[in-house]
Image 1 (cartoon, one colour):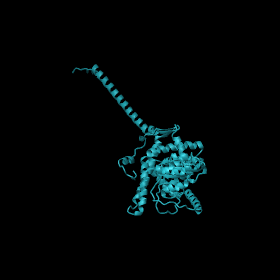
Image 2 (cartoon, helix red, strand yellow):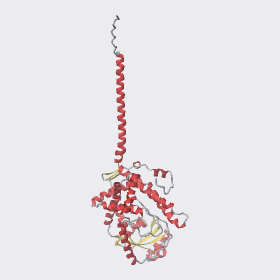
Image 3 (spheres, one colour):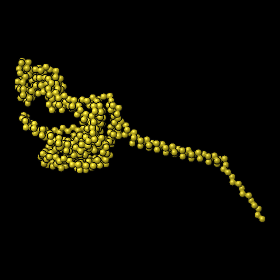
Amino acid sequence: MAKHTKPKPEKGPTKKQEAISRRQREYNRKLLTGLGVVAVLVLAVAAVGVYDILIARPARPVATVNGLSIRAGQYQKRVLFERYELDRILQNIQSQLAVTDPADPNNEFLIQYYQQIGDQFYQQRLGIDRQVLDNMVEEELGRQKAAEVGLTTSDEEISEAIRARLASRLGYVTQAQATSIAGTVVAATATAQTFTPTPLPTSTPTLTVPVTITDTLATEEEFPTPAPTATRHIVTDDEFSQEYAAYLENLTDEVEVREADYRAFVEARLVVESVSDYFAEQVPAEAEQVNMSHIGAETEGNAAGVLRRLDDGEDFSLVATQASSNTFTAQNGGELGWFAEGELTARFNQDVEDAAFSMAPGSYSRPISTTLGLQIIKVNERGLQPLDDRQLRTQQQVAYSDWLTEARSSEGVIILWEPDMAPSDPFLEEALGSPGRSVPLQQ
């Protein structure tokens, strides 16, 4: 009978093996902990990046206006919108040039016109990022002033402004515009029936295009043609709805501007217009003015000769007729008419303005140096006079401009904007690499 052998008990790990195992477990624990920490840090960095891109950066102010911030996100959306509008206008000009035959001599003036306005819009496009900031500061100042004086802008006014803008894109007018145009025509016809024209001197025509645009929301995109146009069509509800829907779809697709954004942009400009109108209404219809004559002199010797004759008692108008270098005004004895404050500065310079408003009626000045040569002026009359339409419009523009300049320069307006706060711009990158390009295609 075989002898039964007891199995030997298994030996446990040695102390050395246990120590190694403990070290391995500790290493694994630390490794997992480290990986977890790294993963948390990576997620934290990613979260910070997302927060910075989606929340922090858009919330950064590009400016503060009396304690209210203009956020970077608002600014960037407006920049994209204004770029889009200007690019489309430039594309429109390019299309007009493409269908205008340069070989036809009758098109020479029209081609020059398109090229000039194209260059002006192009220059505006290059500087639009900063211009948008200035516009938004003006709009916020306007909102605050409107609230102060009780001006409001209704939804109906916003809708009508949008309707007028979209009608203009189609070459149409709104019913309100048609009514206004008809009233203007009637008034102009009545005036023309009693108007006796004064012959004007002929001169060689010079092509000038006074296009100064500060905001595309105030820009009409129609370009004149030499031929007269028929009575313009009044946009229908269906035509407007179709155009508006297509326009909003393009805005959303191209620059992520939605209807609420667009209406806010339009409202901001309407507020500015209402504040401008408010200041215009404060301008009195009459102002201190001077009635003035002048004698132009090309050289100091000519001026000295004129002064000798005046000092000897010769009549100012006679000397002007015989000796003034300005042969046009000499025909009227140097008579220039009435001037309100600021107008002589624009026509001559500040020295002429200061002299005219400090002289007694009937007196004449010593020669005053201007860009138009030496001027000897005489104040014929001085006093409170009604402003004509041109003068009144100028004074109204000055009233708003003076307020805006003062408001912008106040301590409450703080500009924090830097160029890199604007969205990237392929148009500008291409323009910087293509000097001299006048009317680029839409990007």
